[in-house]
Every structure is written in C-alpha cells, then in structure tokens.
Image 1 (cartoon, rainbow, N blue to C red):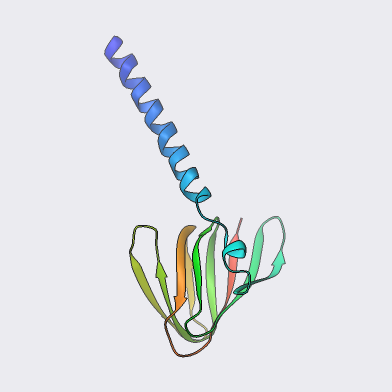
Image 2 (cartoon, rainbow, N blue to C red):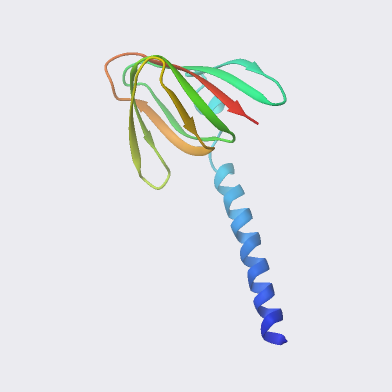
Amino acid sequence: MKKSLILGWIVAVGAVFTFVGGAIAEEMYPDQYVAGPTIYSKKFENERTRVSEIKFNPGEQIAMHTHAYDHFVYILDAGQLTLSTPDGKTNVVDGTVGQIMWIPKETHAAQNTGTSVFRALVVEFK
C-alpha cells in the first residue's frame, strides 16, 4: 500500500514538473513580435487565427523567440533561412515561391543566410 502511494506521488510530482517546465521554457523567450518588430508585421488577428507577413533582408536575423501556436508558412519571395533552436540544432530552409511549410509551436532564432530577401506569410492557429 505504501509503495503504491509513494509511486503515485512520484508520478504526480513528475507530471507537475514536466508541465511547469514546458511552460517555463516558453516563458523564457519573447514572442516573435517582441523579438522581431521590424521583421514581423501583423496583418490580421481574431480569436482563432493570426496572420503576419515576415521579411528578412540578406543577413538579417531575429533573436530566439517562441511561437505559441501551431502555424504554417507560405513563401512569397524565395530565399534561405537558417533556424536555430535553444538546444543548438540548426535547420536550413531553402524556400521557393508558393511553398507551404507546417510548423508546430516552437522556439527558435532565424537568420537570412541567403543572398535575396526572404518574404512569407505566417498563419497561426490559436
């Protein structure tokens, strides 16, 4: 009886720390509008969606930030972005006009590592 009670407490405490830890990780970084006010331009928002246009000039970057919602990106002007996550992993995106990418909520930094302007629409689902 005591072992199952102790095990139950351990599981409950672990679940709380997992939940709180994830919430704290999201709170450690600003949202994209605070981190990149010259990159993100909000075009529309209601209780269900938010639409923004992003524009990265060659070499331009945005600091680490959190996207609180799942979203897709529709590329308007082709280019190359390098995304970096807090754990140090990087992902190079060679975007083409008309390409659509699904991205779950996440935290990353980004830099235009190409030679052309990178422009896209970001549609978030709340």
